[in-house]
Length: 383
Ligand SMILES: [Zn+2]
Image 1 (cartoon, rainbow, N blue to C red):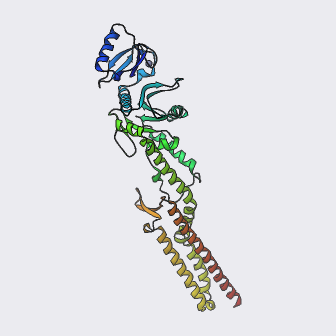
Image 2 (tube, rainbow, N blue to C red):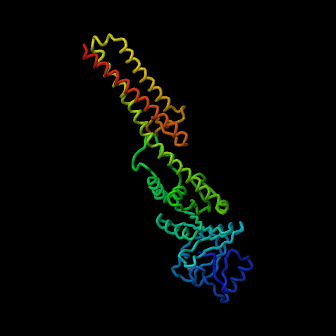
Image 3 (tube, rainbow, N blue to C red):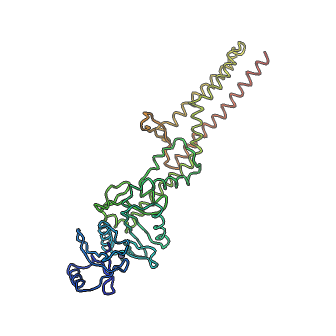
């Protein structure tokens, strides 16, 4: 239902008229004054909504989109219009593009900034949303979508977001160990903005309030003022930047985390180093002559002590108190698992240092073990 009509060649916004002006217009219309709909040029009549909003309606069915617009749509449109005007923005309703490729619900201009509000009560498909938003973007207009079907469509929006995240991944389709993917979860307005750069907000049309991931109920006028001040856009941008940063940290940490897991397997799960020393020790112990060599026994003791030390180092790195990993309960599994803290470049560097330390240890272990093996086999040949 439109707020706008053309009377005597002039565009009129219904709610802008005083009660007196409205009554006069009504009686002039009864006497034959033509009212032309601003949307499609069809003849129209005037009416007051149950909430008291003065507006126009089509006298005949022309198939115009505005005929289907609900009462909620009308009221919300009017509230936005009023708020923009009260903030001293030059404001229009049902504002068409020069080539009529779009008509926006509310269009507001101030200091060169052009802002459009679109109320979407019926379900809109993500592709249509993207296409319609693209028209505003191409003209340098800052658009905001109030989506009543936000949650209904949330799965579509989430899949936009997740495929966008994948595009940014260095290691496509590879699961990176120690990453808690739940830290990348967020709500629809962020999904839409991060994936497509489209600004939106959840709309509860029935009580004319809005909602975001962190705020369940925002009064319409409050939100509109935040948009006009640039704060809402700032929130979307900041959130997107934080997610991109976390994603970057993940990409940078990935190779080190993979190596870290390999060390877990070698140090703890498979006890690879210990088994290597064990098998060498068995040869040493099986040989009566070799067994008597105190110096060799001492070298074995040293290697075992080294392995014990490495195990302790590993446990200290993975402990929560060390600051690199945090232990979280896995829902429904009754176990806790370590997750790397994707928090800063500093943490990433600390992780690198851990892995480098393990690598250095591994190199010196291999050379010590190699020497020992050579000594044993040389001795064996001797006797
Ligand atoms: Zn129309």
